[in-house]
Length: 245
Image (cartoon, rainbow, N blue to C red):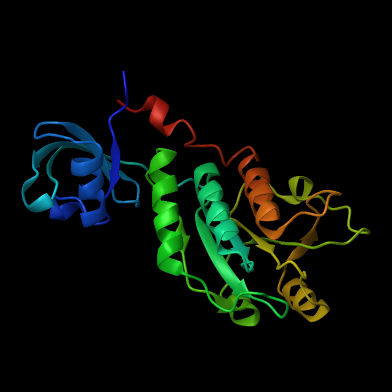
């Protein structure tokens, strides 16, 4: 039996889906009045609902039950310098969201190839990936910031910076602790400069290796998110969709 479709509405008090989500429900899925659906605000609320109207191409719904799921205790923050190829960045956002990430930041480094990002486009990718992977927490995405400005706002206790260094044997999986929020910095194709690396280390970042292979920026980011999700305390709501009724 197919699962009930999941939709995204950041403001559940409106009782109707967004224009884009309404189109998907009415025109693509051809849902009719009385059909069951689920709606999340991306802030941990999962609502069971019933479609009540499709007038004016707007899918209205009535919530029959809702559950609030807490954020996981230890959060993952990925900070990455976007590459020139935006398609690869979209792929990275999609996969990291599916795997599980709480925040994705974009930083502009000295050797960065891209001065700005299409944030709205990337948010849409994250929304789609959140729904596809049946999650109820939307990762936070923000505008790109210069490297030094970004570092001044870092709050996570566990701080890691991925750096191509043959003498660095500290693999991320061995350095991360089971408890506590963490951030992983992944640089551009040209890597971080010495000044950038020194600045990060001066505020508590630890150089880590992601293995012997030289990885593309987006591959390194995804690998890092997988590694951080693998630590014991992180997988505390991975069975969300299996256990709910």
